[in-house]
Length: 322
Image (cartoon, rainbow, N blue to C red; front, side):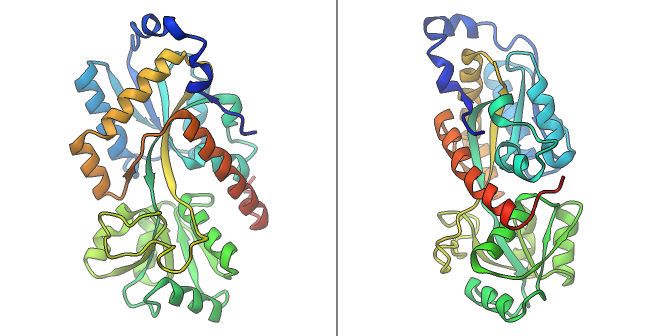
């Protein structure tokens, strides 16, 4: 299920014709589909990329939010596009790895439907608790949950979301019994944490940074391999004593299967250049993104490896939702 079509795999088919094939691309607006609601964590990246690419190439780019189905509706739109790369998906790892296991009946098949272009950025999760929570460190948190089985609730913005699976993996690795409380988005989830209705939330930095700065929440660890610039005093999971825990949300670019290789290369080059533009890069890093910009081969390898992790996690934790 994971032998994916990549830009690298088809580049040999175009060779000398690539330049001429790209001469007229794009010849109409490029639509960047974000498969989640307006105002979500990908919005600053999508709109920033659109503006920078527009300025540098004079191409027309529009951002369209297409929420629904845990990200599946937007991904399906892109997979059905037959416009040679003028419709692209700026999706999360849900779209490329997770949903095919948690929602097999409605998820696209990445191998069958998409051409993977590049992973643009990582979005590590932050382990949030209230500032007055008794656990001051990750080790204390795990000990507290073990001592109180079934008494700690964790929030998520929905079943199968990155925060949901981040907490499920924590429970799976360290045999923790917690209760999952899903909400309709990140805002109500963080509100519930602040109110004490839940005791744990693993989510992106942008969700809770203001509450950390305001002294209402505490960050116990980040799930990145390195400390985050915006949280320099917060340890990684490995530094906190849990080196087995390696999981991060990430955002990547893809188009429908069959997109010409020259068009894929145009998209890859300009989108990677955009996220590395200093002003946008600094803004995204402040929001907790770690800029990446992978090759197609690295993208495929990431999907292969994480596919094995998520397949097992979904099976062991009975997380299939349909």
